[in-house]
Length: 101
Image 1 (tube, helix red, strand yellow):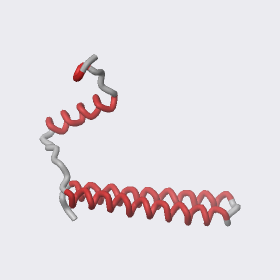
Image 2 (cartoon, rainbow, N blue to C red):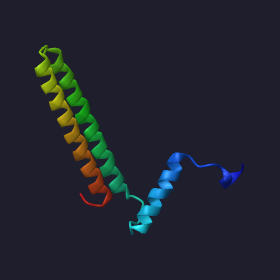
Image 3 (cartoon, one colour):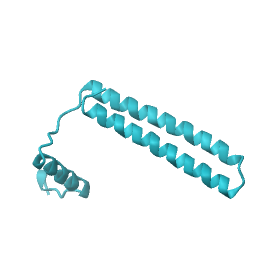
Image 4 (cartoon, rainbow, N blue to C red):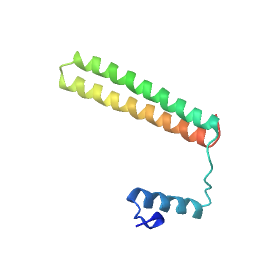
């Protein structure tokens, strides 16, 4: 098979469907500005650092706790913190994509 006759991967097919759906809904695709790219990269760097810090603190706390109930509570707290950090990161990325600060 040559050129454009090659079979598409499931990923490529899914992306085509999403682009078509966006076009049908009137959502236009545009390139990100350098400032938007930097804001997105910064949001990801900050979130990654916060997640790493939270993991280190969690691991440290878990070493000192032997009771099952206390460990479960620490796990739940850790999961909530991770979800909050990820949610905040995603919100900042979406805000940057829309061109806002």
